Image (cartoon, rainbow, N blue to C red; front, side, top):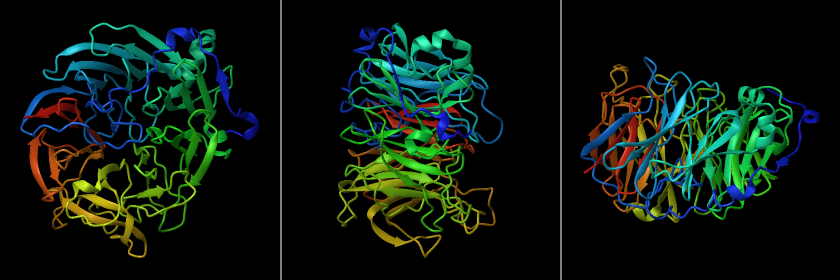
Length: 507
């Protein structure tokens, strides 16, 4: 949907009802350093770096379905990331029907159900169905709801907890015409919470509303007050119609900047916004580094921005022309305020880069203080793709010639590891192996390893010292599926989704 500038409002701030009741609800994150995994990719920078040692991958302690009506054949759905509280309660988003969802809270040790809560959230229409993306802050769990509202559930570690609804455009406006907002407003990204207790997410508006809402970015402050800005106004481009579907906003380490991708349904920008006012700080057009054309922002991707310890920002896109880069896309790379494009990575499709402290990689002798881990599939049968699907550790500050398009410079491969299971679908491609099916891996700095899920049905530990897949555990017979998140819980249990089932793995 495209709107003219005349139809857009620059920003609306609507007082919320019962502010005092919400004042302590969105409290700063106090559990991030105690082993909790509070948001997709661990934190608001999407680093995916665990603060506890992961257990050995020896036993599946318990499993639960994350989809009660999975599709036959390829699973083109992005299941929401599990979360883990400091007290070891596992929050599990579950798809219960064609487009219905609930959240379950389970005991981390036994998997026993503590409570379940239905949400009116509906996934937006997309090539790969988006998942439900909750987040935790303080003593509250925040869950996307219908009509663009948020369910705030107190005491997620307890069987009972009060439930409040937050509304970025004003609960009084919703109550004046609930049917219109339920029909026309829906959240289209996972939720992101910064350390100050501010909540951010993208939303779609599918039809007219009495207050002239337009698709864009929402912010709910710790006192419950709501702010929003349309994607078109935020970007300064009237052709921009939405926040990229499934693209969780990211926050700079100091909390001052919010990063989000916006799209006209095909291409668009990465934005740096003032996190308090949602005013534009800078924008950068997302460009294919090889062709110079607009990169594709595909609604089937769940790529989100990653913020490095130095403030650099990374975001994955699809190549244009497609599939000139073997359907690998690119990992675009910018400085903190997006004023400078830096060295891209050679894989970005449906991937959220993870941060790897350089000290974890003994064979690395460069100058970067951190490295990046990304998926590095090279899909068999797509242009020159050979099916040699890998994981990669990349140096964001050193270059090499791209392995597919040699005239383009990309981040240097510090090391890679090849998948181990032959892919029977490609008998004419020697050495072809099953894909790595991760959107975001989990980095364990204590064992100097990375946990990554594969379409062969195994969860693997990539040992960064020996550059070997030193542990593996079979989760399923294997499935062709959308890319999935990997999590390390507060007691070191690993959580991986394979074949529409969440598995809790440990020693």
